[in-house]
Length: 87
Image 1 (spheres, rainbow, N blue to C red):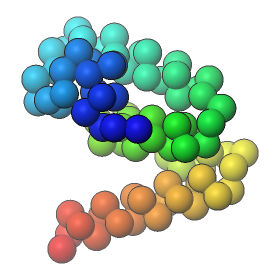
Image 2: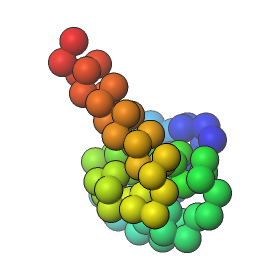
Image 3: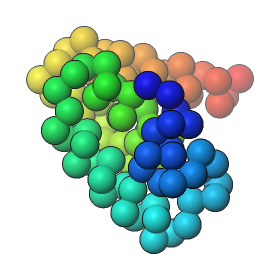
């Protein structure tokens, strides 16, 4: 899944800085619903990373409680992001 395409789909822009408050709330709501109903693991992970980038992703243990591999991938992703931000 393409990050810019996801932003465009949920927030009508590919620039996260340009998302208006009302559009953010609407897009966030739609994204959360899609995340909860998505069955494809790769797509679900992509939606979660977008939610994380925008600051409202649930913790990996909650988001992927039934899928240990995805939970571990999410934890690894967060660890890598943390290292990039610190480094």
